[in-house]
Length: 610
Image 1 (tube, rainbow, N blue to C red):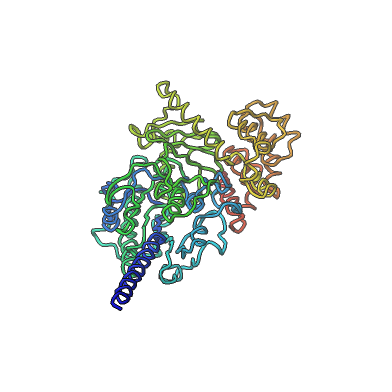
Image 2 (cartoon, rainbow, N blue to C red):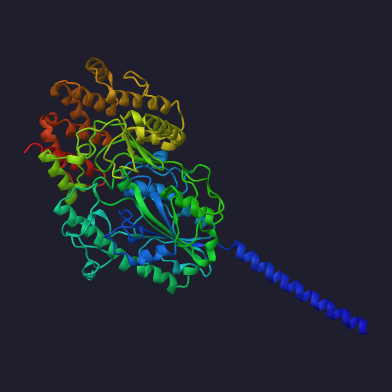
């Protein structure tokens, strides 16, 4: 009897230990399966002008305190210098030129095989919201977000215990807020205190801008807007995290979509245009995922398109093999990058084709359209006082250190030593002492273009046709027989090639009048015809020879060919005079998404003929 009772007691003890063990195992299993939440705080048009980055004008106590308990990255960059294309790279983890979204305000559809990382997070059970600006250069579908309306896009609407991914965008550092008479929309600029305000006579604008009273005033306004963001937006959001009880579960990223909103900054793929602040805070619960201790600095080269893969890695999810972005956080972090590549294509109404490679010291640039100036007239940007200051220098012939930036054409290649020349004034491309560096970085760019199947060589009208033909730009450009990228990079082009894209670039690079004329007589592609006419005029032909070509194209059904033709006409000066009545009609159109670039270009050309 006693023996039976002892057995029952021992059995109960064993069962109790089993229950405790099961509960403990379940707890461990739950902890292992738990995933962090993520919050992206995105500023617009902002370089690292924060106190924590050493800006002497910055008044940013909230972000400086945030940096003191976060990882601060000193070499973080956007993939491009402007919002829509940069945000395309951010959300897809792909170079825009890899998927056809490289042109500002693109009309390309996102290929079905390219899934922005919030879609993967949603499928893994995350509650995903985007408050404010998307501007990804393509249309987002219902699979992207659980909510994106301003009042609904908040993590507090998720299910209990559900992890979230949230993007909060702050628009009041945007370029448009610098325009005369502009007002902020999310914050109250009248609430700036005397301490927060910046005296134009006491600020220190960067050397890459003119030393001008109007520029100093504009820079002071920009610094005011950063202070407003810090005080009235960042501070309240961080407090909202604490108040709603999720701060301890959330990894918070603060960054800007590209550099500061000034000429040589925003839109350009310079240091000023692409270097951004990046602060990442890991709460205590997830501190083991941080690469360094809180408050420490990383000089690792990071692109904003690496953020998506990094979030997937931190969440324990698979990272698609086709991504250009590389995880730099979590268990699936890649080896540090040795270089970054940047792209500039059409910016609003202005066509261009520029590629830049940056390593830890040098920045190499290849200008594939040297006939397009470094500082073309951009209607949107010309509203800035700093743009007007540059134009005054240009008009007076007082270009000084901005001589190359204000020239009518660009060099084919540029090379800058960022250690000795951080503002990129001295082009070393022709310096024999830097020949080895130039050739190395030239090879690296060529290898990158081939690896990513850079679609930038397709003029935009042909780009749209390629998408229609193959289903996506990416699919079209993957086929060397359709898209002979190796020949283009090697400059193996000819005017009589069967491929219209090859003929286009051959025409832009040719100076032989007889050959250009011969090809023009039989050419049918609208983009190639414009390129031929443009080069004919540069090579010395009479305006009357090419005016009919431009007239035909600007009256054609091909919208992007029309934009190309109007660009060429603007750069060719007097050539446009016989077409003024047509240009007046174009300029008088209502400015819509489809017509705005043509309207702006026509208005610009008309100002040359008062």
